[in-house]
Amino acid sequence: MITKEAAFVSSTSVAAELYVVGGVARAMSISVKNAKAIANRAGVKARGFSPITDFIDEMSIETMKLVNLINKDSIELSRIAINELRIRDAVEKFQKVTETASDAKYISSLDESVNKLKQNQHEEHVKLYSYARKLKNLMDEISKKMSVASVIVCNSRIEAVNAEEYRSNLESIANDIESACATIRDRVNSSEQRLDSAIQQWKGNSQDESD
Image 1 (cartoon, rainbow, N blue to C red):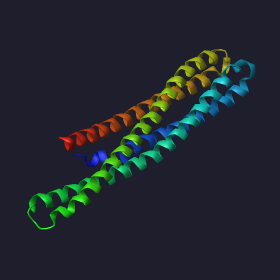
Image 2 (cartoon, one colour):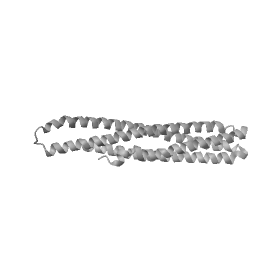
Image 3 (cartoon, rainbow, N blue to C red):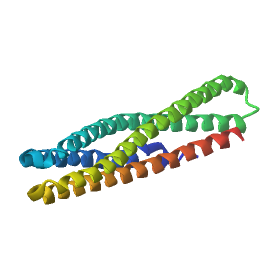
Image 4 (cartoon, rainbow, N blue to C red):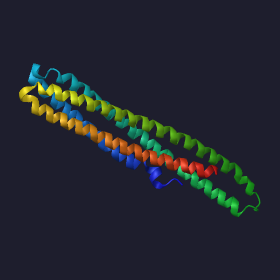
């Protein structure tokens, strides 16, 4: 059966994880802007640092946009899951009626209603998997961006060495950005695991129906 956790996964667990991701991405963007300011003060000593911060800043902004998209889609996923659950309850109630009153007059008149409900349920299942796949793709995109950003941060440390008296500040900011990337990856991975768990419940439920 689809549990409450599966039905609300996108509006609670996933949304909560990604709310943190959005905040971390915003903090990362602020750190990058601080790094830009320091690099500007350092002038030629940190000329290789500016392109790096520009790139990471762009990635943090793109991450925030992806988080917003995920939040919208997760709300829709939750709505679909809840609607599917309601339809399932209705189908089960109709089936109980037909089983307990199989010899009642006009009981066959319920068949059309049950069939329509089952069709609606199937349509909701299709939407459910479609939105789930879309969410996973968006999450994968964020994870990939953070992996690339981590590599870029390593390059920024190399450039920071040449910044002389500004080196410690730039390295500290690089550490903050690297930590932010790791946090975002962890949160996104956690969200994906919760979503995968819900998908498995939906699949298991579908299998039970077909048996």
